[in-house]
Image (cartoon, rainbow, N blue to C red; front, side, top):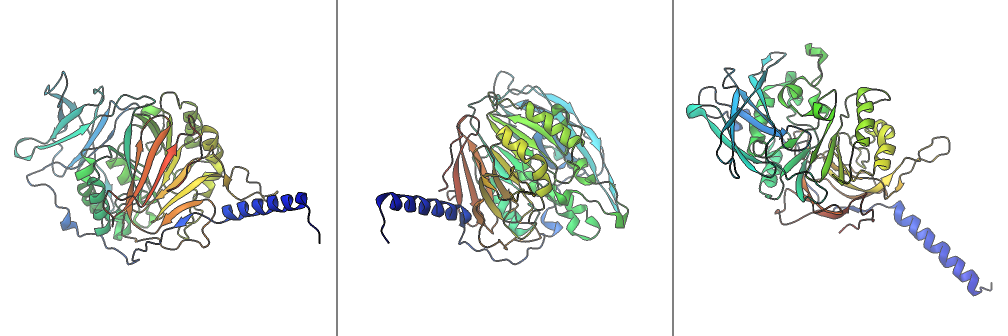
Length: 465
């Protein structure tokens, strides 16, 4: 058979296209690192003792208290008495250095089956100075406890800022490794937490003392930098078998968020602006169908995102939309179908999820073409789409999710069945550096890293390294 140059050129073109298709039909990297899959028991309650002293305040944690970063919600528990129900605070620097003010606290408590909580205090401080270190003191006399935090810089398009990222933490030996590893990483300034906190519901009768021990456990970080909360399935605590019919009861009593400042009707979905990021928190376990409150709120919220002010658009939810692990496979599918087209249209930069107890990072892909009649049901590369990070690898009692699908699908860029945390260092309106750190490595080592390019200002395809 004779071949001319034109025929050869056509064959080479076809071969190139076939190789391109084959290349995308296989996924990215499945890490060769293998963590042992044995389970991990919760640390004994005695590992998390209350602070010394009568009625000493405990379980101290902070989160953002307003829309733009000048507010802080300070929360704590007193086990025996309602007082002290205020918090003194003062700037450690600037023109108001050491000038003390006080903020009153609202007090709540709850009963859950055979458990009665202590007095849970939430004090909201507003109109703080940007980028300023503050001290605050909880308790009086010998029981007084001193903490500090730094407010973020003023919201702006080129403000550098570093977020920590974690999910599905629990309170095991592995959890402690993750938290200690995170604390030893000095760069992160605020934690983006993707849900599943204490895992109290994994114990008989949803042992709510495990909410207390978890609050003491995370205090060494959460009392000094804001944790931005997302509710997961282990926050539901819906247990009709023990006559507990109110979902999210312990979580919503203990962890307050500034949902009203973003016109949300529920603390389970809300948004904040911090430095150069607009952060949206959604609830995977609340109604999100058409015309529900969460659906209506998100539709309106996305129209309020001002990329000239906050170039980086980050979404937190719990159940991942793209996941190549057999554990919880496609559990987030109905939410993806409801909202993915909005995310692509809005050019969301990154979506953070937990739920699956492993680590995975996706390509920028979408499946908004999905049409069951025409058979269009495969994700495709889409440079207007987010990168999806599954980071449910905090180290909880349920152990590692080590059953990845094979072959690795095209949408998966990197995956590893291990425990760890991540950081997102925003540099300016165009560039951010993302790193994931497994617990077994020193903080100088990034097991996975990527330069992220902003979808609004610099929508260029990223290259993993």
